[in-house]
Length: 444
Image (cartoon, rainbow, N blue to C red; front, side, top):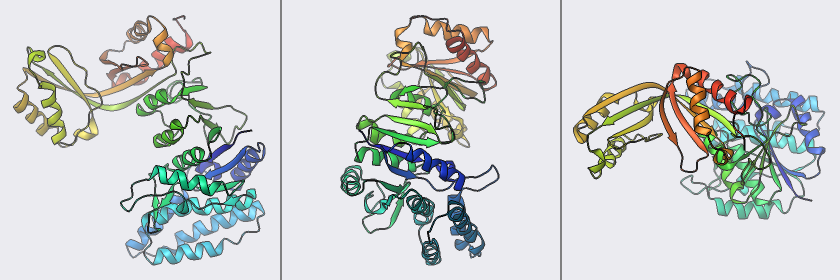
């Protein structure tokens, strides 16, 4: 029998009803031995996340505004959960300590981490599991840089002492003992670190969605779920806008070859999506794994006769971008042309100066700017094994009346990225989905 690590997000531990669902899920499988929890999330649309309320307390203090009313809201929320769950847990000493630390100038990281901390204290009591504080086994150096190997060694040693344990997500500690948090969404990272430390059979990430869908459900009605996806495919889809799992949570388990299973706390019977290291298309008839995209890009297009014979031309373009601290998304090129695709947000307030520098240092014959571009990625290992994938994609867009502004295909041949007008974004995604998923015009 293997060991399963289960991380439950904020919506999964938002109140007593959700916490009871979590307990039922854990108790249904004795292999779920190590649990990571987030801070309580929203209970309803107009509600506040608990971490946001903690930040608000800190802000009030910094501006000499009374914070006690907001802090009492947090305190009462936990008291209500404890009462509704019928627990014999005195939460008051924890809140008294946190309040004193707040008044004594506790750091932002400390305050932000207390939602996860309190959530784990409550969960450990409710489940009958041990409580393990990450400040003793997840390490950052004095500059706040995460220390992966030292953390893995300490976590492995500490968790070996506990048959079953609950850990707060999101934080660890520096050498002086001060709390240091990961970025928002960092509870996913904690779960992955725990999975690696105990050499888990699987890392289950429980949230409020049943895994990934092949397209944005706001655009494609009844989009099919993705049952299996590789780490590489997930990286491509996430980069282009699909977001369920914190990107940095992939790396600890990827290196240990531990699969991730995205599950839905509210639909525990649904198998969700499994993220694996191998080709996800084996044993399926799917040509693509998924479609995702983002709006808000600008293309700067450069034309110069005999560009290919001018050594270092593209290097000069990249050096101009570097001077403005601008990273680019794509760099499609031809014999006498090169285009650079940049997030429009990065160009706000500096586009004119940037174009002037490009003109001065590169002397192009023409320099054009095209804004309002959307990028769409069609991703899947199955694309490599079929002929006519590109033809199917481009025909679908042509028939839908979508003009393609840019084409870029990665060397791995598992994704094709097209640039279209933002106004055509939804139409293009629907057309691609229809061609590859609904009609399946290609065969093996």
